[in-house]
Length: 468
Image 1 (cartoon, rainbow, N blue to C red):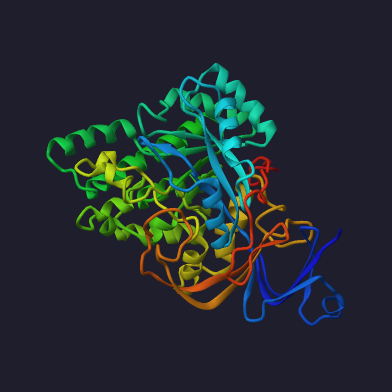
Image 2: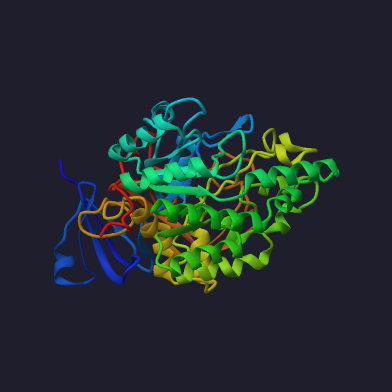
């Protein structure tokens, strides 16, 4: 049975345009857009009409970097696929790309199947997967080809975390060569983990155990050096490169220099680097542990370079790296030893709002907000056209956003399964009001109406910035 929904009277904002238009949705897809008040729009009838007067109508957010249920440091990220995708929906995100993890000595397929099983029937919104490569060898290189054909078109490697996820330069080069052939995109955690481990050991020997030392040992120069090295390895391999969670001015400079040469090099940053700093890591009474993530928070001076990189398109995407651990019982594992604090912050629910606040604050334009939060991540990871925009034929992933509402971010009111907010007490202008996922209303005027299992697995094409 056909269902039609009409969203009437709003300002439709995409990465390309801003138009006062009505949006007609039929059978889970965008059927048409027409100027508000036009004969065409006035002729439309629908089973349901949503009034978006004085509101924005925007594409659902695409968060291309989340870690639901990730095992890390002897514990697990506190959001399940069910709680994490529900929180994402509350925050106006309608697609996540999570990371399936290959265990050392095991196949990619085994890791991927484990993540399929974790997510199946649990998600409130649509989801896809990247693949973390922990063990590059002849077998896993062959598996990469098969995964690309299956719609897992991006592979994450780590220059950090020796003994856990770390790959050496030879392994990285081999994986990049493979991706150059199969159309996949290598995603890189660019920090010199071998050098960082030396600095960690030295800091602990000096009795420097507080959370703030997490940021001090993970030096800016070791992020910049690894970013430079990853770019050169990608050049040797003839492969594209996407650097995740860029946090430092010097790392942005490496990306900008590569892009100035016309290289297919891309960068992502996250809200925590744009809005938080080492001041948070230094909060007393172990409170700084709440802000331990890697790459770490940087001194506030780095924020200007990140905003500039987003405006100049040297950074293309803002994702969350959502990887929450509760303060009680999880972050506390690192009391007396910062190196044992689980690395990660909650944020999947806050990204769209924080980036709208950046529009209010004058850092970015409205269209750039939609670009870095919706369109660019969809393009980067082979989802654009279906996700990331409002156009006939696209999935009806739509957010009605009230730019005038005010809210205060707080653990008391958020829906992520974590006992603190990284943005506790922050006042934001703008709030998600209604969210549709493939035409189904999952948040209705600030009330959750979605369900676990509505979200479906979405295979991806290859990076759409590379397709000629």
